[in-house]
Length: 180
Image (cartoon, rainbow, N blue to C red; front, side):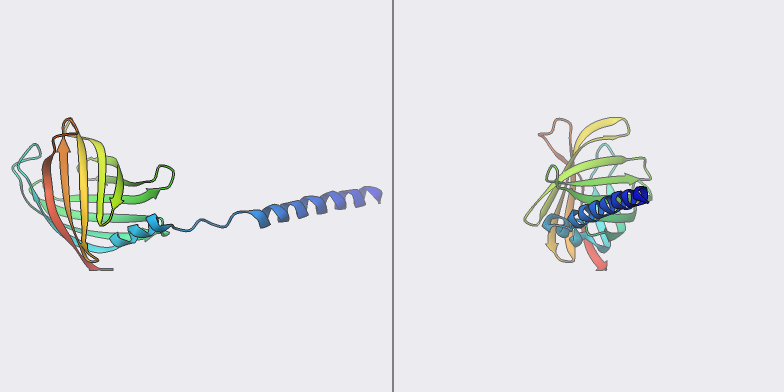
């Protein structure tokens, strides 16, 4: 009988300790202002762009359609398709905010075999992402700039550089929100 009281006493102490720890657990994280800024990109977008003549070919018109969704309020996931002089392409991208180093991260893959992680910042209505890139065996630095023109449109420019100081425009265009 005495052993049962001891066992019940130990069990009660463990249980009350577990309840106390659970009561002190921090609340689930909530998206901060940096995460909330990503909501701009949620929706359906259509784009038109001009690929400049250069290392990726002769240049020409491109069109795109992207569907982007908020993922828990912390990230935006986009699936897209584009058509142009380089052929048809599908893309998948995730953009997030990294509180640890206070930068935005954009991870993109496409059906041309590209997989790239860019780091970015937002200043006013301008987003700037940079990365060390490789395409077709050529290594270079990338800079992708998005300017929010209105709640339903933005301009974008992709630039490349061999040395990180002299930049050449590769693609320039606009994108318009066609729905949510």
